[in-house]
Image (cartoon, rainbow, N blue to C red; front, side, top):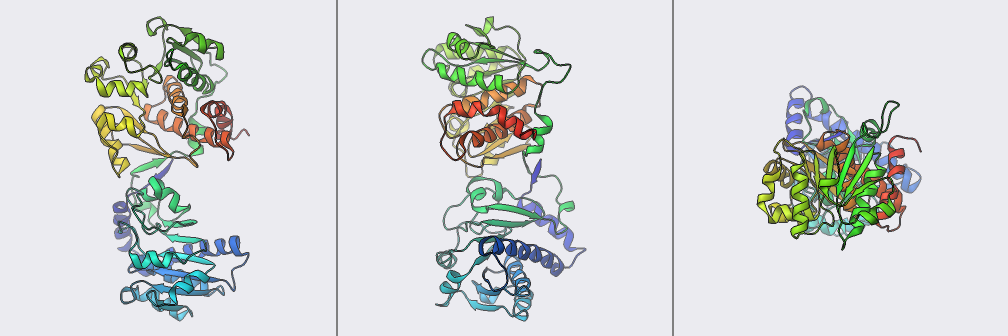
Length: 483
């Protein structure tokens, strides 16, 4: 997994490192990495480095200093570099001196020529504000940004993106690439910040060892390759996990089909479907063991309950029976609404039985109130409140365990934003729970595989949930590097 550290953790690591290493050395290291990234972008977009134009958007403090030092390095490569100083009287003194000594041109960003300088640039480096900033860009910086047509390279974090939440509330830099130091920050992976950051390159300038445990973690392909359950030579249909599916109704039989399809394709050893859509499920998935009720389903290692069961008496009875079964359970869709509307249903759950709740924003609001700007904090509170793993769906999906651990899955697109895709996700989670995987990891790995399957199925065009489900085997093969 890849770690994500808060701004406070980074500042503490910087303070610790500064006791041993001069500040100018750290800035030199950071700026050199920014300059290398800038040359790569120039080659990519202009086919050359020497003779190109780079504009620096320079704010006060160390972030601007990094940009100025990077400009000095670029001057050594034959690049014309202009620094547009948004706070001339507070520009980093050493950085500005090094930049001018290298032959760089610095001018007040408020002058009438600043806009044309920004417009002529082949690349713009964003050194406006750093990790301590909050809120949108100030009007002067936003006005300057309107002239920019070239790719933007952000230093540490795109200016205008909230470092803690990734929230963008107004004018903000949208970078083609971001060079950050020590480790990823929440602003790079959460909310709109993930899109505004572009490709994020992490540069170790000596901070990594001092950062401590990450605040968040990102699932990556190596995690899926290592942990996704696949049958071995000694496995049989029971050892691979038996998952129960309580989904669908006469009104919504498709939900039952979609959940079952995902559970089957996720390499479950056996899928037992229980509900009124038994005939429809049997027609689509003859390998599933189908019955009309949860009581008749037989033994399972996990349950997925909720999609399409309705929020009336019959749905409530189904949820009650599943919660009483005492096995790890994924609770989705209508089952979440039922829990929100009927507090007594929580009493049916064995407190020692793992529970995974998978709400979208509306269902989350029914449970605990609206999702706040700090999605991570909201999900952490919900997980602690319900003593359950909580997965909040979205392009950036946040998964929290009751003990405060958080996983984040960044989808590469919004192809999974389609009716029924949540049913597919709940089927994947149920399958992983049946395999014996830690519920927090089961939810996180399922979310990552779901995103991968959506990307493979879409190939640049909208898809339905059936196509997403059909791509699960290909996504598993890709994760295991078999394609």
